[in-house]
Image (cartoon, rainbow, N blue to C red):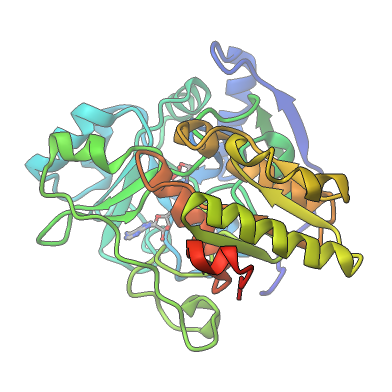
Length: 379
Ligand code: TXA
Ligand code: MG
């Protein structure tokens, strides 16, 4: 990817996540009004924001992220009235979803209005719109007095940032300002729903659960399984336009190989322990992402030096989601050679967790069944 951007010095400025200081917001909004970029917290992950109605700002976003121009951006608004400024038509079911879930972690795909440059939508005639609930995001969009295009504030293909420090690690020297409002509460990106298809479908599971969405629109379809390409690389890297953006198999990748285990709980534990010991015997550093229910079984691995992280219980998908990306980045920063990861049930935000882990694993998903695990036949 061409790195055609001028280096800038990046300033990280603290901001009160509940009651953002007016002076801090005004400084960030002035940059946005000047066509510059600002990293800011939302309730899901940190966003890399620019004026959604100015092509040059969108160009800067793609360059700073190293993102291919074929992957469209989400347009963020602060008030529901702004929806008709960025979408050419708003069907009745969009109003119903907006009323139930905005502000919040839900993105709607609607027909693009001509005010939104084609660069923002990657040439598509549809536009992704979301109204975030985070007070800093809300205040910033209002002060900028324009819709804000914002992808997650990470380098292309890396794990999304849930703290200002994650964003700084990826974008230092590429953006003038990062607003630090502390860790983001939801921890996974917004749910993206296509309202331009005959039947509304989730394109990306995220911070609004399928169960909650179906209470408002029972006909919503679950996401299709992600597609791999022949090379295992995202289509956009092969220079093709994306037919279903965001549906790439390899997308949320830690820089360390991640192996995902799926199957019955006890069988997963047995398989992870066997696999961890195999790596440890070769002198490799091992990171394990587990649930609190697994900690006892993983003790032998921990005693031999494996880094075990168990951010929550299997019964707490929201806590798992909140900690997921930070834990992956922590293991990555600890320079482990491999991350072994248990799977979480696809219930509530667990569906988004499952999606991100499968993408992070690429093809490395190991299905275990109880008998195979008993025989230690992991592969
Ligand atoms: O929670 C979030 O959504 C965060 C915060 C910053 O708001 N943003 C975010 O943006 O995750 P990004 O760019 O990393 O992901 C946007 C997703 C991508 O999967 C993209 O392909 C999809 O939305 N998308 C955007 N416009 C689309 C469109 N017109 N049709 C289908 N998918 C679209
Ligand atoms: Mg992203």
